[in-house]
Amino acid sequence: MFLGKENFQSKRVRLNFHPREVFQYWKSDLKAMEKPSYTVRLMTEDDVPQTLDVWRSTGMQEGTHCLYTWLKVDPEAFQIAVTDSGEVIAVCCAVIHHPNLAFVGVYAVREKYRGCGIGKEVWDKCMKHVENMNVVINAVPDKVLLYRDKGGFPILETEWACVVNETEEPINHEALSNEVPDGVEIVPFQDSHLPAMFEYDLALIGYDRKLALELNCKEFDSKTFVAFKDGKCVGFGTIKRSCHNVGQVGPLYADDPAVAEVMLRTLIESHPDVKGFAMMTISSNVPANNFIKKIGCPTTEECPRLYRKEKVEVDKSKVIAHFDLNFCPY
Image (cartoon, rainbow, N blue to C red):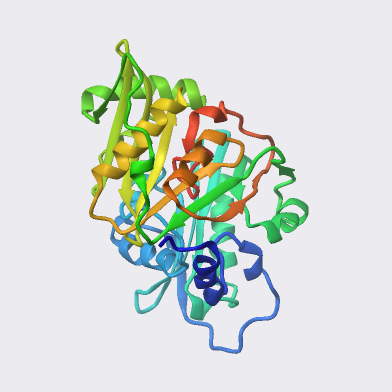
């Protein structure tokens, strides 16, 4: 029996919090509690376990080692609030992808410290980091107008939204095809594949992500597979253990949906020791969302996309699963 949308969402209702709802911290009325003594500073590798625990407390997914990856991509991306006793109580991240583009995510405050203005401080420091760049953010539906009209993100994507698909129950991956199209081979990642993957990614995304890609492929508790046809990369995908011990797929890119389907099955089968599944899709990508239906994974939420200056466009038919909803546009 699959974990239904209603039951999964009810867990979040009890949390009474969504990490992307930045404006709920921007209230003048503070909770009737003593504000802790804390410092807002850059996150270091030593802070990652505690910082990931803050994120885990929201009920949201993230890879167990993704924070290490993106900290290396942008060492000044993560701002955290740390009490005098050394407890990490809040985090926000703004990753600079290139001099004109940044992405904001992983925004969370420990429940007992919410409403004290701590979240706004880490947010403000992240915004200072990205200065006047084009910034991308994902929002929950009831906060879209606040982001658009008051938060400095006036451009709303109206053609599609980010779809969150996740369950803690087993999924039926055997419903996916295992017939590789003629002339295509899907193989486990090796370092020698990186140049072909870099070329594919650059053509799809439009800017250099070499460091992020290599680190992603080498994360602990992850598996990556690459599709080749006539010696050329035609797609690749990664599955990793999430902080909630489910198999989280992303990125998953492919020129051909038939290749993507086999690769998705291959990824799931390569990580049999996880208890559930998570994958973030694009609402307009019909094949990707059909795969989700085939395996019986519920959709738990749709997150609209907003931009500060202009949209970031790619061939979304090739984006079967987002790289990561918290760190990059696709």
